[in-house]
Structures are given as C-alpha cells and as structure tokens.
Image 1 (cartoon, rainbow, N blue to C red):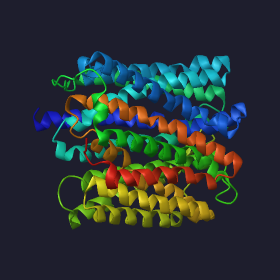
Image 2 (image 1 turned 90 degrees about the horizontal axis):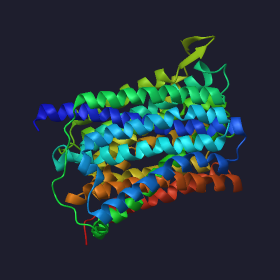
Image 3 (image 1 turned 180 degrees about the vertical axis):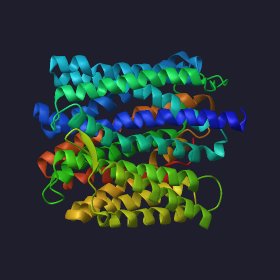
Length: 465
C-alpha cells in the first residue's frame, strides 16, 4: 500500500478510536447518574464498570479459545475492515437497547444493555489496535498507535461534556432521569449506525495476515506478552479507577465541594490530559532524536488542546440557550506546570517507549500520593493532571506486548483486550476501600497498578522464552 492510501486508511481508523473513547468515558457519568436515580451504594455503582469491562474479558477469552482450538483467527478470516463494521453495528444495538431498559425502569436492564454495547467495543478494539500497528513500519508502530489513541482521548475529552449536557440539560429540566439517559444513548446508537455505513463506503484496506497460526496455546510461550497482559490489566484498571471516582472525589468538601453536574465537567481535564500526552507522544516516538523543534510542537499541541478543553468546559446551557461561564484561568497554573513536567519526562525518556513507561508511572505515583495527603486545589489538580502521565501507557504496553508475534498478532491482541477487565476489577476494589475508609485513601489501588506498569517498562517487556 502506498503512502497516500496508508494516510487515507489511518484517517478513517482514527474515527473508530474516537468512537470507543467517547462511549467508554460515558460510564463515568452513568456511575453518578444511576446513583441519583436508583440510590446505589459505591459497590453497586461499580457494577457499571464491571458490566462494561466484564464484557471485554468474556468476549476476548472466547475469541482466544476459538482461535486456539481451531487454529483459525476469526478476525483474520473476515478481514479487519469487515470486523470493524460488524463491531460498530453491535455497539449501536447496545446503545439503542437503553430505550427498552428505561421502559422496564430497571438498573439490571441498563447493565444488560451496557454489556451488549461493550461487546461491540471489545470487538472494535481487537480489530483496530493491531490494524494501527501493522499498517506501516514496525519501527513507528508506537508513534502511530499513540496518534490514534490521541483521537481516542479526544472522544474521552468531549464525551463528559456532551454527555453531561444531553443528560442534565438537553433531555431534562436540569436533573438527570431515566428518560434523559435512554434518549441520549438512542442518539448515540443512531450515530454509530451511520458510522458503520461510512466505514463500509470508505473501503479501508482489508489487511489479512497470511502466516498460518498453529492451534493450541503456543502464544502464551511469549513471556513479554504474558507480562504485558498483566500490565494492560493494571493500566486500564488504574486509569478507569481514577476516572470512575473523580466526580466523587471533587464532591468532597475537603477537595472542591462541587455539585455533581459541575464536577462532571472536570472529567474532561483528566481525559483531556490523555489526549495531550498521546498527541505529544506521536511526535516524541517518531523514531527521530529529540530537538527544539519537537519540543516547540509538543508545547503548541498542549496549549491548543488545553485551550479547547477550557473553552469546552465553559459552555453551559441556561434557559434553553448556550452561553459561556468561564472558570478562573489562574486555576490552571498547576496543570500547566504538569504539562511542562510531562515534556521533561519525554525528553528524559529519549523517545523510548520502555523508559517512558517507567518515568511516567513514577511521576503518577507521586501525583496520586499528593492527592491522598493534601486537600483543596493541590489535591484536585494532582488527580486531574494524572491523565497526562497515563497517556502513553496503553500504546506503549500494547506495541511492546505484540512485538514479534507474527501469525499470533490477532490472538495476542485478543488476550490484551481481555485484560481490559482490569477496568472492572480495580474500581470495584476501590469502591470497597471508599466504603471502609474514604475516597482519598482509595487511591492506593491505582498506585499499586502503577508500580507494576513501571516494572513492565523496566524489565517485563524484554523478549525471552
């Protein structure tokens, strides 16, 4: 495939990364919305993430077992492009299922619809991640995946803003309700059906790996993959844990004492940090040495995205019309300092995915420790800025874990996607810590996950039998 076709395919692929980022972060809003509607405890609210990320485990495990027993890779047989279209249709059906769930007025029915939605997202991840990695030179796979993940983060940044406006304002009278939730997801479902049709029309290159994959579980002989599965488990679990409980954290009188609708807007600074970090990583990991030009481009991206987040979170709907309610820009001072620290971390890592995993994880451990031990603005921005340092985790772990897998690439990808179940497990564990102690103490859970990620970047990624 020539460079023009490759760029064309990559642009189409980024829309899919945006899609699942947008719909995944909506869980953070649902956790708090359902609490108000059904009067749930923290443990019951954690079932939202368990239903969503539990689907990743079940579907990916089934995919792995089918490919292992038959020796045939399902996605490879139908092609990555067709797999992505089917995934989008399933995702749309899951969203549309929120309407009958609302008619039953049942929390369980909503969880079932969310599980179906997550099946589509799971299959989309199994197709799209290796597609981004194999569509060009292996040396720049991490850079490509970071750029694609940057658009995934654009979805996670916009998701809380759009979701909060639709659920709390457009489809309601200032208060969330079952109807406002279902109507929001019906709109999403229709959009995803249109996107499936668009992907069909785009005729993206339908990569098929011609290497024969033996039956059995030989893929598990790859040490760096097995340890990478655990790294993905802890990475996604740690990241989702923070996203899940940020609103609860900001509602605390010791931190911000914000209302739920106000606190939901701040989610965009956390998820937007991932977008900033991933877009900067696309520059830092391009295979060339660090230079002043690179650093300038990274700063330009960071300030542009931060300005976008600041403006987007200032949009409010009042009396049926949109208006800007600007926050005090001086409150962003700590966040800008963290951006400077992230650029320094990229410089110190010398563009190497392995070093960046170690350095970024250590910085995040420091930020979360600060959030546990301090109060007010310092604690708040320490947590929000952690998104900057979670940014490179998925892309770097994924590309390191599937390196040199050959015919086992899709099978290895399914195992890595299966490990996303960490997004169900760690928030659930954290909910118990919250109930037993408090919200600040509970950040010890993602800190443990970050310690393992640092180990994977230091030693676990090395290819050994």
